[in-house]
Each structure stands twice: as structure tokens, then as C-alpha cells.
Length: 459
Image (tube, rainbow, N blue to C red; front, top):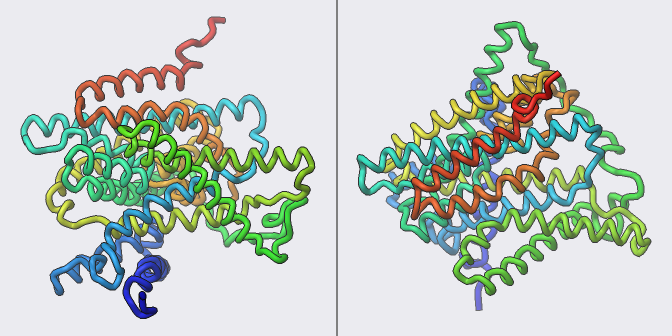
């Protein structure tokens, strides 16, 4: 029988506790140091960086990785990767459960659609440049994994979780040594790019007199922000946040069952299917939300169970854990081996993302160019929360439609982005062909994006 004092009992608690302590330490450091406070780098990135530095120092002193100590019961690094994998999907599920608000008129729908297309076009551009670079390097260095550069759009464009998913597929299925840590390192560089690039852009705009950075106090939350009409009460026999967590986990279990069924039907695609846990989680979340709406319309249930405010808090919690765990899981030996390549990919990734999104914002979002650009640049080098952090510097009350564009663009982005996810599976065996398809796809997406200029009606 397992004793209560055994590592196997406490390991499952110690690892999340360390991550949360890292988050608190990162928060304290950011609040205390002006340079960090002004950098706009998310606290979760700082927390993950602190844990990574601590792990490196620990290994230098004791000769072993801190997260591989028996205190965690199992391989702690593997557990960090598992946490990153699951929290990515759970964060998306919680977001998918949120109730949709009115998207506005036809012009707003067009802007939302264009934002989704811009997102996918940026993925493609990052993929073309990243894959092109590693193919080029592969001509001179024989043992380089040519498809490694395609992790750039997953690390920058989609964040830590997807960088880990595809890094794992490349490492376990195609022999890319250190693929997981390579992807996680790119994701970490993305957050740094968002923070530094965002600050530099804001300083330039301020010097030109184009903007004034608006600093406001924390927005006060009213009861109406938390409790919508006809919702279940905040506290009764079952706490309201418990209900939100229950629906989130239930939707994820449905996704797990779907993945299990698909894995049995197509065993050769099992790794890919489970790599899409976040996408199937989103679909399951939408399914659960649709069922609840149907039951309400049929008056089988009479109250609203889902709450946007609490679901946002849950989603943000999972994403914070995802980022800090993902960065802490980076293996330093991979950075040593691919350091120069990672640095080049990171710098080029930041530059092309900056230039392309600035061009698009100037052409298609003329009424709020800077707000749209900052939101997109932050999101496409870090995560949605990074985009919001940058946006709030000049639009703290979200008076422009930029924040809504980011929220509602997910559907067109998923629809147009799916082919790229499958192309990423072709890259390890046929990198040059994949590069050509990505380039053709990028041209098509930009024809769609700039259709009003290309197919302008003659007067």
C-alpha cells in the first residue's frame, strides 16, 4: 500500500505548486523591476524563465535536472510537457464555451473575416521563411532536420502548446533530436519578441506624436459583469465556478472519446489525431454549448449555466500554466545545440510578422491601424493574452473593434488554417514540396485578403 508520505502521493501536487510559485515569483519580479514592468512580457513567461534558470543552476551544482528529481514521483520534465499539452486544450475549451455576442453589421463581419485571414496568412509567411531557412541550412549541415523551421508558425503564431505538439510529432515520429524543446524555445522567443517589439513600436509612435499611451487604473468589475440575466446564482448548493469547470472538463472528455474512436479507425494517424486535442476540444465545447442552448429553447432547462466572466478566468488560468510549464520544460542542451539557428529564426520571425501585419493594418483597418496592428503582432508572436496586453497600452477600454476582431476571428482562422496543420505532417519527408505548397497557399490567402483592391469595381 502507498504511504501518504511517499513521493508518488505528493509528486502530483508538488509539480503544479512549483509552477504556481514560479508565477508568483515572476509577478513579484515584474512589479519590482521597472525594465520588466515596461517590457510588456507576460508574467507567465518571466515565471517560466525563472524556473528554467533555477533548473540550470541546480543541474550545475547537483548534476541533475531539478524536475527529474524523485520528489516529483515520475519524470518531472515529461510531466511538464503533459501539463502543457492538456492546458492548451482546456484553455481553448473554456473559451469555446463562452456565449457569443452580437458581431455587429456587415462591415464588422468583413473586418472579423479579414482578421482571421490575416492570422492564417501570417502563419503561412512564418512557415515559408522558417522552413526555407532550415532547408537552406540543410544543404550545408547534413544532420539538420530540414522541417525544423516549420515550428516557427506553431511557436510564434499558435503558442507554446502547439509548438510542443508538433515538436513531439517531429521528435518521436521523425527522429528530430530535441524537437519538443526546439518548439518550446521558439515559443519563448516569440513572447520576448512580442514584448520588446511591442515596446519599441509604442515608443516610436509616441515620439512621432501618433499616439498617447493611455494609462488607466484597473477597471472596476460590477456585479452585472459577472452575473448575466437568468444565470444560475453565484453561490448555491454547487458553486458557480465549479459548474464552469465541470462543463469545461466534460467537453474535454468528449474530445478524448472522439480522439479514441478516430484513433481506432485510423491507427496510422493516431499521433496526429491526439495532437489535435485542442481543435477537437473546441468542437466539443461548441457541441456542449449548442446542446445547452437547445435544452433552454425547449424549456427542458430554465437557467443559463455558462458564464463568460468565469470561463475567461478559467481559460486564462490554463493558459498561464501552459506557458510557465512549457518554458520550464525546455532542455538547455537543445538550446546549446541549436542556439544560433533558434536566434536567427526568432529574429527573422519577429521582423516578418511585424512588417506584414503593419502593412495589412494600414491597408485594411484604416480607422484603427495601431490598435489592430498591436493586437495582431502580440497575438502572432505570443498568445491572445499578449495581444491584449499590447492593445491595452493605447486602447485600455477596448473602444476600437480590435479586441472583438481577435475573439471572433477564430472560426475563419481555424477553417483556413487546417490545411497548414496537415501540411506540417508532410514537411519531414518532403520539405521542398511543402515549401512550394505553402507559398501557393500564401498567394491564395492574400488574394482573398486584398480582394477589394484586386477586384475593385470599375466606375
